[in-house]
Image (cartoon, rainbow, N blue to C red; front, side, top):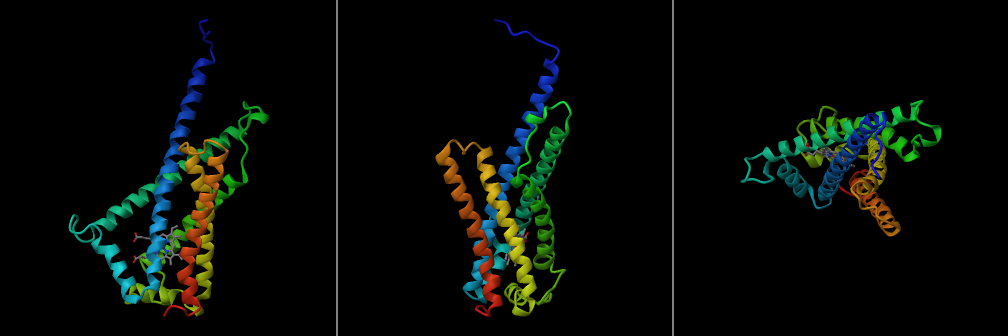
Length: 242
Ligand code: HEM
């Protein structure tokens, strides 16, 4: 039987287009989020070099800045390519998050949508947004401290990367360790939900077993990151590394 076309058809296609653009934005959020989580895992393992000795850590820091992919690339090129990719992922992730949030808010407040069909704003979604903003502020503080060294707490411009870590997280700067615990805690809560959401968007959440596996994996990655990131500051603060 031929399907009757009605005057509602054009508005349906607008709706479909909006839906498709939301699916694309969710996919961009998933892929960029997973790239950022991969970076975090490498960063966390890199920081653990602290426990070898000062020379190993300083060597790792200088390799990171100058020697990755050398001689395929000239000295110091990789770090800039890597920074551009990281920044592009961050901008794409935040832009899509803001845009999806605006669309959901619009749908919730639309008088043309029956109350029963309005999308619910879950607790996780709300905390992801607030967490994301806090995270951005803490990342800026972190970069000002350790990358540009504009905020110097317990170290100066002449300090080696190892001395910088030891100085920043010494017992007298216990409050820096506290700020980092909050920073890493917020990161890990964001990662826990984000990891689960990303794989769900990419189609991995296909049944009850997959759901349990994804949940366990998301908690595992979040706890691994928290413990791995906090080990060096806590060990330094308690004088176990010097
Ligand atoms: C206790 C936890 C952390 C410690 C001790 C730490 C330490 C450091 C240090 C020492 C650097 C400078 C590396 C160098 O230039 O030689 C750095 C860079 C960086 N960290 Fe962290 N970090 C921690 C957690 C995080 C977290 C949770 C994030 C992201 C949410 C993050 C993102 C970055 C970024 C983007 C850079 C700049 C990389 C670059 O472009 O040079 N860090 N971190």
